[in-house]
Image 1 (spheres, rainbow, N blue to C red):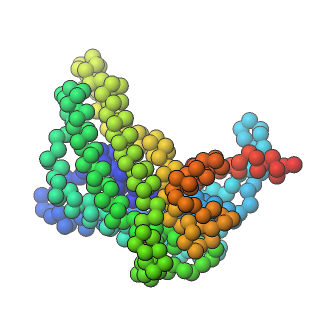
Image 2 (tube, rainbow, N blue to C red):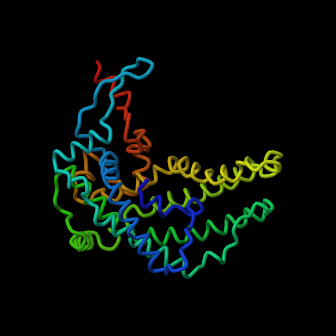
Amino acid sequence: MTDEGVVQRGSLVERDGVPSAGATPVDVDTAIVLLGAGVTTITHPLLYVKLLIQVGHEPLAPTLGNTMFGRKVLYLPGFFSYARHIVRVDGKRGLFRGLPPRLMCSSISTVVRSKVKQVVHREDFEHVSNRDDLKTSLRKVVKETSHEMVVQCLSRIATHPFHVISVRCMAQFVGRETKYGGVLSCVVKIFQEEGVSGFFVGLVPHMLGEVIFLWCCNLLAHFINTYAVDDNASICRNSAFCQAPAVRSYTKFVMGIAVSLLTYPFMLVADLMAVNNCGLAAGLPPYSPVFKSWIHCWRHLSSKGQLFRGSSFFFRRVPAATVAMTLE
C-alpha cells in the first residue's frame, strides 16, 4: 500500500483533527500538504523498491538459506540489499526517482478531499454512538462510508495521471531508459502516444481495491465493535479501568492492516497495468506479457501464483519449483 493510500483510505479508520480556534481551513490544508509531502519523501525509497519487485526486476542473485525446520530455501534480497544496489547504480539521489509526481499526487489529493468535504460537510452525517441500536448504527456507518467512498474515488481520479507518471519514471530503472523525465514532458509524451486514456491505465483495479478496502474495513470494524466489544459488561459498569473504548479505537486500525493484505492484488495489477506496453522494458517481455486488460493481467499473475508479488520486503523466498531446479 502506498503512503498516500494510507492517508486517502483513512475514512472511518482515520480521526479528523479539530483545528485550533485561530486556524483557518487554508492553514490546516497547508499543514496537511506539507506533512503529506514529508511522509511521501521519507517513504519513497520503500515504494520505489516495492515497484521494482512488483514488475519482476530481481538484479541480485538469491542466497541459499535454511528455514527454522532445516529445509533449504533460496531467499531473494530484502529492502536494504535492494536499496544498496540502487545506490551503487544511481547514487543516493537514485532512491528518489519518480518522487516529484508522487508529491503532486499527495498535494492534489489533499486539496480535492478538502474541497469535497466543504461541499458535503461532515456535520451533515450522523456519527455512530454506543447508545444506537444495531440497525441505526449500521445505517450511520453505511452513510458515512458512502460519503468517504465518493471522496476517495474523486481523489483517485484526480491523482491517477500523476501516479502513472511516477510508476513509469521508477520503472525506467529496469531498462535504464530515459524516456520519462520531468512531469510536464511526461504529460506531453503520454498524451501524444496514448491519448487521454494513457493517463488512466490501471485506474479501475486501483479504485476497486480502495473501495473494497473501505467497505470491508469499516463494516468489519463495526460488527466487531458491536458484537465482540461489550460496554455493558460488569467490569465496565463497575470499574474506571474499562478497556472497551481503547479496544474499539484499535479495531479499525487492525482491520485496516488485515484488509489491506487482501486487497493488495488490486494494487499490484494497477501498477503493472500503468507500465505495461508503454515502451519500457519493465512492461514488455520477458518481464511481462502485453496484457489486453487488467483482468488478463490478474489471471496471468494468478496462474503463476504471484498475486502478492512485492507485498513483502523481507524473507522473500524464490518459488519452490525454482529452488528444486537450482539445487539439482
